[in-house]
Length: 116
Image 1 (cartoon, rainbow, N blue to C red):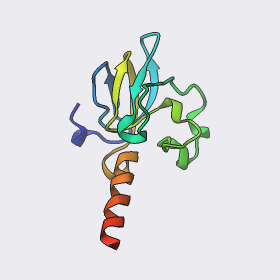
Image 2: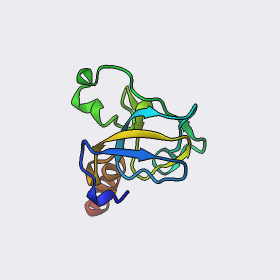
Image 3: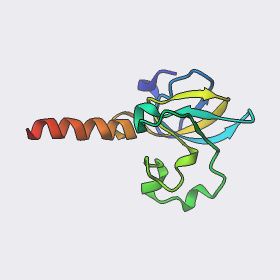
Image 4: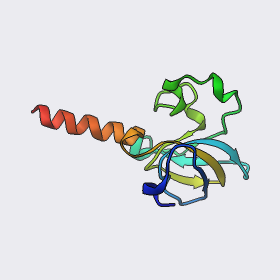
């Protein structure tokens, strides 16, 4: 999937070894497990088990829609730049480009560098 062609609301199929192209809300899995290597985002060396969000999406406020790295529904979020290590799933794009969690980190680093 070409990340530059994605917009929020696009549906993306995800498989083992695939780099996640945007921040995506996991909506279903077709395997018994779905794991993601988030080391590029969190530094955590172990893969993280993910589960589709089963609640009412209309009850998620704007700060949680993208999951935010620390969001309350982060277990159902897949972050751009991380890699699927186990399973197959389907998700909906919620953030792209500099609006992703990785983009926010990049923006912070760039701003910090320009302050020096």
